Length: 414
Image 1: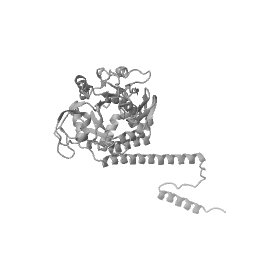
Image 2 (image 1 turned 135 degrees about the vertical axis):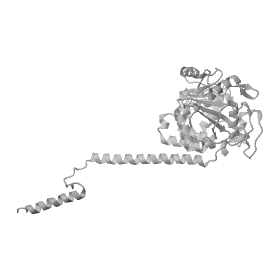
Image 3 (image 1 turned 60 degrees about the horizontal axis):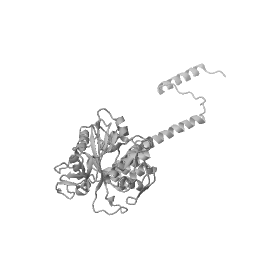
Image 4 (image 1 turned 90 degrees about the vertical axis):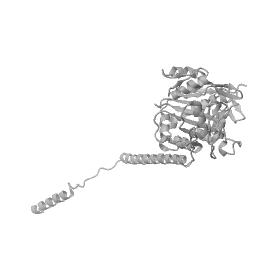
């Protein structure tokens, strides 16, 4: 049967008109290529990656909100000036150098697992100075039994306490709270302290748990019934109550003094810094979140630190500090009566360097409670090799180490 040419012409004309009205040619149906198993798996995998990425981003967001909500919900400590007036908090992004005071309270935080204490003493007081370029940091450990002048401090119940010309540093927390500890250290060092916090025993436990334990070297067996520490010679990974006992032990290390405890604490803290900055921790979002959550729940912060931008900015600044440029140093002191007193010349040299924002280099040993690990060179030798031309060299009677140096705790030698 022959087709009608007139009909074919009309049909083609109608098709062209339809294509024009649709804005382009109409697809002709043909045979579709069958999807392979591999292409189906690829498509499914890409969808899975997208879902995981979105879920991970949401999890990070929720985790950050959870941490910051914890910080915001806690009452902050109002820092004051030398006249007792509330200081306007320095909040927001942090530019330039800054100082942070961290006090370790022996109160137990109300946990019945610890002894009931009449007053909270700051048995640990550390001052962190970070340089303006955020390339160097110095952590100064101030002995708890060091006699210092205490300025007029705010009374938590209102009013103010009188000045004291000579009192042990560890009384400041019970005397006027964290604000008093800050005022006292400011007066002693001449450094402006804008940020501060107090950590309790349980905070130490939770932070050591968060990173999966802190590896420490011990030069010999240590058993201290007072703190509960029981470790064997060699490498030990400490967390929980044993991490707390290690930081608290005094009778188990060196000569049994608080000064020996400071150098023993620096063994732990330097290893903690190396652990936190390791890829195993920083690349593990679960550990990062657990560490941030532990800090948020167990550290009482100054009002100046209850700000999301400020906390993030401080964290970024510390992230960039090379462990070899993070120096732990004991505040220069000498024995006096039943405590210690500042050694003026050495202390002035150290504090002048920090006030002028200059890095410091150690030339002395690590202190009474620690020693260089194994066949490694003494920390002073390593520090001298890594010192820059503009660094301030501290005298050999000033003790400490960098966060990069591996040291071992020395058992009690009574």
